[in-house]
Image (cartoon, rainbow, N blue to C red; front, side, top):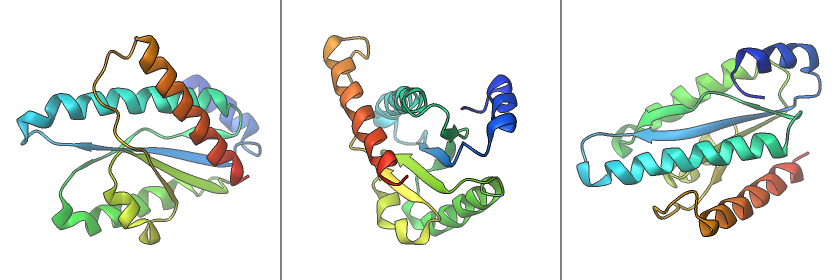
Length: 153
């Protein structure tokens, strides 16, 4: 279920079965112009992953809106605190598992300080997302991520 009106109606009626919270982590920046297209592409890929994982694990997973942050390693501890506040707020609902999905390996380095499991994905090189190769790669990774989440149940 996603942060959509109709999904929230369903969630309220069946929340005892929805035990897993999924939070996409997306960084945002405008200062490094050479990275803008790559960063935007990663956001597109994350959206595909999240949608496909939600379909794969339908009925057990609730997807929050993306947690967006400015990538700045100097103040990353502030982001950890802010993210934990976000998670604390969300887990007032009966979620038993919290997964954070990201392409930013910095989150993996601070995972011990985060109130959830960080699932770091290696970046996908820019490609045509409609190509057969892209669909195959993305599908394979979605299956791997879904299986990993299932292993926590």
